Amino acid sequence: MKINIKSPISVSVAMIAGGIVLLGYFFPMDSIPALNALYNAITTTAMLLAAVALLLGIFNLLSVHLGKVSEASNTAVYSLFLVGALLTTFGATLYYKPDGFFPSWLFEYVQIPIETSLMAVLTVSLISASMRVLNQRITIFSMLFLFSATGALLSIGPVFGFNLPIIGKLLDPVASGGARGILLGVALGTIATGLRILMGSDRPYGE
Amino acid sequence: MNLLGLVFVLLFAGLMAGFSFLHRKRTMPNLREIPSFSRLRNAIDLAVEDGSRLHLSLGHADITGAQSAAGLVGLSMLRRISLVAADSDQPPVVTAGDGTLALLAQDTLRNAHITLGSLSDYSNTMGRVAGVTPFSYAAGTISLIRDEGVSANLLIGSFGHEIALITTAGERSQVLSLAGTDTLTAQAVAYATAHEQLIGEELFAGGAYVGAGPMHTASLHAQDVIRWLLITAILLSALVQLVNSF
Image (cartoon, rainbow over all chains, first blue to last red; front, side):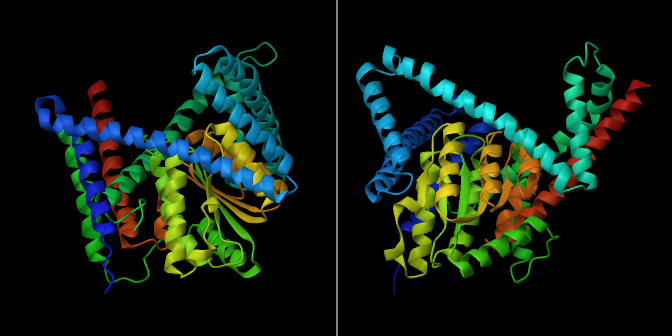
């Protein structure tokens, strides 16, 4: 008979660590020094592990693109460029420290402009998508969606020099009420997801 | 001491345990029809049949942050999807914008291959980090959708407005995009750009709809009870304020 001893240990660690962190939200931890020390140890370890996982993730990204380069696929040039940029940035940040001149220059004059240009592409994508909604899916909900979006746009700034605050006053209660309803559902779903992990029924950390 | 919060959490956990016990013998859970999940089931079946690839995007939330729950739901769905699709010609590929999520996705896919007895087909590149900032993540995901024979995009996790770049890439490649996220901005963007959307708590119902376990169904019933309690409390407090204003 094969006994999986990994599962009960990982479930116990998740439940105990999660339980202690959850207690920290309800009780003042400062009054119980031993529990406070445990709470700090758990949260610090979690942050350290997340940082190590990020580093592993970057190595994973590197290995995927090195694989594409070695296979000489159609997109190998892009992958080669990515590998070069990644190694240059990584090396420069290690050598000059994160707040050094060269890493700051890369961030300010390479990364920010690229991300800004993606933001510009995003704007065009959204305008094209809103047109597609009208063309492809004319339902009561899509009409309501476009009506709300148009109303919100008209209420945030002057239109041909005229402010139209009345639109905002009419739409705000409906829009904020709907948004709160959606957020309430998201919050309940988030709590349920956390509780399933604390109860050991969901195990995203493996079997 | 936040006693009310503790009571709320204990009540929620008690309801979940209670519903799980009550429905332990029910094989078919009684759930309302959500069209997005029907299309998801069809997309999985189609991907297995025609040997194309499913892509699951887990978003870029940090696992230690408050928005990690959406990514964890994505992992629950991945577990079920990978058990169905892992032994197809093109097993599913998962992208994440966070190292921990990518590692958990790799672990989930590896376990699915072990269960199916096809560990030799597993590769760590099936679960990958596509980028570590929202836009670099979107850029990395777009190239995957375009170049790796993806037939359906499932975006289940925490996203911002950059989700539009991913869904638009799906539209251009003529593949199905199903998006469920926890942020209001991304939900609004996904409504306009994705073929199917999961609004609000529908995202968190994903596990129950793909058959991830009885506790997922029990937690849906618990959410319904708590929701009605909250609605009653909100209406009562509004009524009290109205009466007091006279």
